[in-house]
Amino acid sequence: MPPAVARVPGLASLLRERAGEDGPGHFGLAATDYTHSTAPNRRFPDLVTQRLVKAALAGAAVPYSEDQLEQLAAHCTDMEDEARKVERRVKKAAAALVLESRVGQVFDAVVTGAAKKGTWVRLLAPPVEGRLERGFEGVDVGDRVRVRLIGTDVERGFIDFAIA
Image 1 (cartoon, helix red, strand yellow):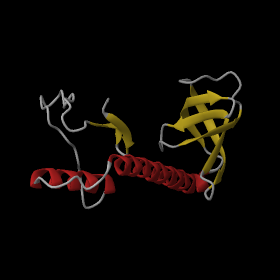
Image 2: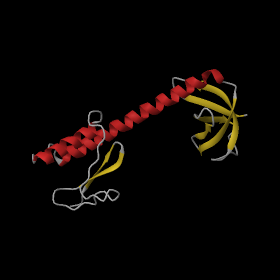
Image 3: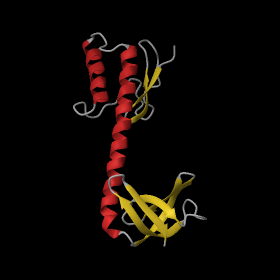
């Protein structure tokens, strides 16, 4: 049976070998037995890792079943995803607040995205991103443009620009 793979916050995936299996270890450290954790007092995934290591060192039973580990990994990933969404929204709201008094000013920017949903630019200073509401026709990702700040919405974290 292949090793289980679960997404874990902070890591692309966690490769877990079952007892008696040979795993890849950690190539960069030239170690066959390897685990990683950071701050067990702050992050639940690290606490789970520490409990597993403690049980292994003590020769005690594993404190979680495979199903529980898979559920914990999924739950931690979901919570990390939600935390990232909140963090992103707070950053966008803070950027909108910083620029709120600068409506009408012109800035140097770079086009960072162009799709059906909209065209996005990142200011060179301050380094914030917003939507290009007017004048986006003919611009492409990577283009340097001059944009005028036409509005902000702090509550929603929106920053709107037009080609200057």
